[in-house]
Image (cartoon, rainbow over all chains, first blue to last red; front, side, top):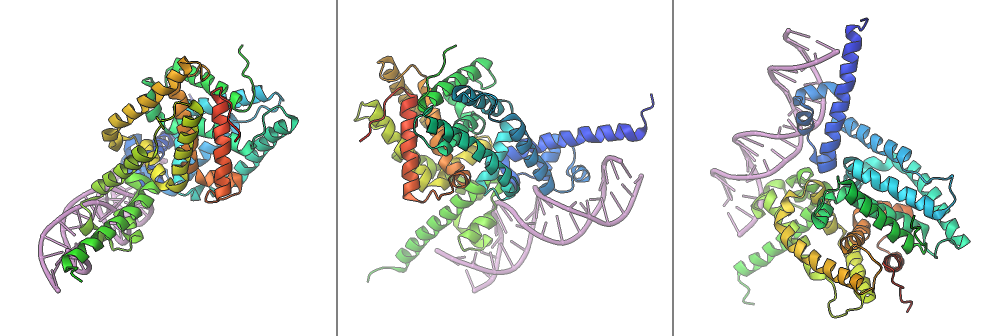
Length: 212
Length: 212
DNA sequence: GTCTATAAGACGATAGAC
DNA sequence: GTCTATCGTCTTATAGAC
């Protein structure tokens, strides 16, 4: 056992930081930046407010941390599969990734939404990359249209409508569960939403969903 | 001129209340209930915080006022046209109403979203009516499916996906304008979104959009 | 009827004790 | 390195002046 006291503390501190970040994600996703108190974050993390302020620089930088986590997930998990040049496969896979993210990380999705609702000022640093990634996807969709693989449509609108419907299951989870009288945690519910979403979108693009 | 002093004051007060409500709508829609200070509302209404508290009972009831406005609009403006039994006409008209509301009252749309994001506790009073209205629409859609007018789909999912895409243009207006490089105030932009949305949804339902 | 002065407490943040 | 005591500000709300 050569674990020094410093090492132990370091590990504990890292766990504590993750603990705090998770508490922050929950609070910020519900109440936004303005609406969240460091008090509430501290309480959720099992700390006193004054203790919390030892671990974080300030509320603003904790929020920036959390925002960057959202975008890191987004960039790593949700991409167009460029291997496949088949619109049906690319779109189906993209819809699954986006929807799965809403199901498994609804709080991260909601942080993006609260930030956008409150003016998106703290999001400006992330826009340039997002714009590039978006343009790449839009160009691919539009090239499909040019090749006649999709009906004549605006790739930007298609992409936004996919975002809208997948994001819905995070932001409006309360409403969805009320309407469906089912939990979004239930794998069967998730699967039937996914299947309907794929059919709906592919048909809307003038594609025929493959039935295997 | 028989206008008494009392009448004049009454009129002014009503104007002031509307002024305050509008300021409240703007602030609440951006920052939610927790995130909005009466200070910010007062300032936007051109009052001092202490003046504002003369006109309102408290923050909570001002918020309740604003929420009820949202639902009054919703109930009056956004309905299924039961006169027409034609799915294409009913859906097209519904999409136009919903989308138009997002364009012309984005702040009211956003208040609903912030409230849902923060747990929707203050919305509970409005759910029963909303559930009834929703069920009626779902039943109609499902009857179309039973008659073979629409492809086999779950009416609840279709309705939610229409909500998601139309609501998007209020909640995510910042993102939409960035992606489209256009203003959502522009009638041409609005019209092209509407047309694409109708084509997309009708095709997704297995209907063929009429082209006149 | 309208507005000011001010209370009572929550807010984010820090200096300094341990 | 960790936590407590505390500061100054901002919060909602009201009592009382005009």
